[in-house]
Structure formats: structure tokens, C-alpha cells
Length: 421
Image 1 (tube, rainbow, N blue to C red):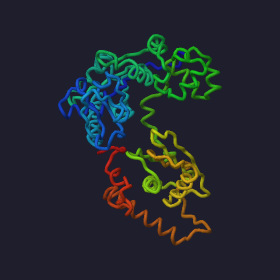
Image 2 (image 1 turned 60 degrees about the horizontal axis):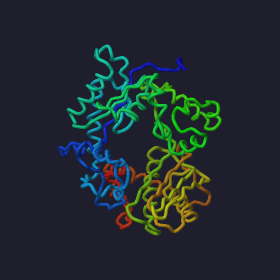
Image 3 (image 1 turned 135 degrees about the horizontal axis):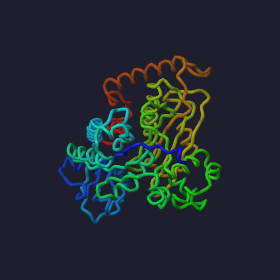
Image 4 (image 1 turned 90 degrees about the horizontal axis):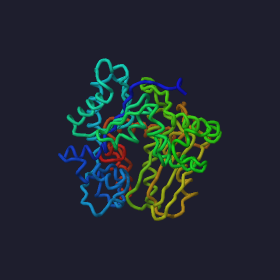
């Protein structure tokens, strides 16, 4: 096992309750003393909570829930999400990181989390890794009034585990792990889903095998894990021993390749036919536009519906087409076909559309039973619409049906990541 171990100085820094902390900073409030929630209260009790302050987390309030699930015995301050402002803060903090390391030694994991490789900088700073972490975190707070936490380890995995499992409980919000710490700090962890990389479904399967603590996996037969879960099982075994060969520098050289395009929407009231058809059409428009912009066509259409909490359930099905397409009308027809086949007349609160089996867009191929003039006209119209939207914004051109009460497209187009800009 020793030969697989990396010995670098990696930091994983997370901005604590980021959205809520930014709102507290803007209001001049202490997030550890303020019951603040980032959510659009005007949308009703079903609205999703994006973040809660550390003060509320002390009372067991989860970071992600719905407004109606929040405690009623605390006078909560509601702040409407402002994604543009959060992105502005995130950019500012990335600039702070770049004062300490070069771009190639930084990997931005999410809007509020980053990995830094300090291995080649230790001699330059003449400080310990913990001292450098404190220096970076102090600079973040000084310039933004946002608190952060930090995990330090000999590789990216260990730094992430130290961050997730220990740093939030540490007085200075810093946790440092090394390989010899694993039996004491990682192997005792339960439930299994507390470890990064283990989801609820995987946890259930592992529990059925009699594995309830991380140490149970670390001391299990790796061959049996591989037979059960494939390469993921083998990787999981090595992760419980802190083995991870990932390098930040390598990750920065990876060019992501889109294998699918998809979009979904959580609705703030119950929808039924025919109103829900408008939502489906708007999601199809978005997916089709992304196909055209990337010069791709899709052969498989995925469509999903989630019913209201009271009804529970829903469905997710897929349909393969005879020919790849990027046409709104073709994708919309496929979605309606799946909807009519599987819909159970329950109130709808979630709709999702995605496409897979992507191919490079060839020259236009017309089906023998298709009107060639109509197909060319549709392609030209949507190409022109794409150009207008790109130049003047998503709401520059919309379908006339966007004025219907059931439509949500104009409001969504003014959002970032599905939330208020």
C-alpha cells in the first residue's frame, strides 16, 4: 500500500455556508449569531432553501430543505437568492487564492470549494501548512467577511475527507490528516454516507453486506467488493486507506466532453395537463438550443416527472429515435409520447428533460415521409432565434405562449443556475 501513497501538501478550502455568509456580510451581521435563510419566501412554503446560516445549523436545520420544513419557533431572516452577487464574491475569493499559488496549482471544485497544491511553495513561505492555511483564511475574511474551513492532507482525497469530517468541528476550522490518522479519524465514521463518494444507495448495499463503519470496508476483502461493484468497489476500498493518485495539475488539463444535455424544473405549485405541456415545451426548447449551439444531435430522449410530496413517486423513461435530432418538434413529440404512456393523473411538481447518445451534427438528412421545405424552414428559424438570444439575451425572443399564466420561461431566463440573479 505504501507505494501507492502520495506525499504532497494539499488544501481543500470551503466557504462556510457560502450563500448565507455572503448575505450576512452584506447586511453586516455575524452568521454565527444570525438566523438567516437564503430562499425566496414570496414563492410560498414549497420554495427550496439554498442555504442556512451556521447559527441555524447548530439547531439541526439542514442546509437544503423547503421553507415549510424550517422551525417555526425561531424568527428567521429570509433573503432572496442573488446568484450574480455570489458569483462576484466567489470570483473575488479565487483572486485571493491566486495570490498564494499559481493557476496550475489550483483546482476550483465548485462555487464555494477549491483545492490548492502547496507542495512547491513550502520553502518559499517558510511556514507550516497550518500557518499558510490560517494566512489564506484570514485574507478571505479580511476582504469579504466570509468564513472558511480547511482540510489538509497528502493528496486531494485526504484533504477533502479532513475538510468534510473534522474541520467544521475544529476550533480554528482547520483539520490536518495523514495516513496514520485513518484508523482513528476515518475508520470509526458511521453512517457510511458521511464519507465523500458514498451515496445513500451504495450505503444500503454495503449495509446488506454487513459493512456499517468505514473501517469495515477498509478491512473487507477487496476482491469481493470488486465482484459486487466492479471497479468502483475496488476504488472505494483504496479510498478507505487514503489512496488517491489524482493531481491538481492533471485535472486542470482535462477537457470536459459533454455526453448529455439536460434541464429540469421544480415547480412552485401543482401542475396538470394541459398547463404542464407548456413547461415541457420550454425545457425542450432549452435542450434543443444547447444541441444546436454545440453542433450535436441526440438519438435518445429521457423524460421524467415527479409528483407532489403528498402523492409521491413519478416516473423516468427514455425513448430512442430512428434518427438523431436536434429538432424541438421531434424531441417534444417524444416527451409527450412518454408522458401520455406513463402519467398517472397525479399533481406534478418536477419535470426533467435530457438527451443522450450524442453525435456530431451531419448535413441535414430528411426522412422520406418528412416535408423537406418545412424541415429547412424550421432549422433556419431556430438558427436565427439562437443568434438573437446569444446577442441580446435569452428573453429577447420567446414563444407567444410564454405570456400564458402556466409559463415560467421568462422568469427562469432571468435566473442563474435556476435562482434569482
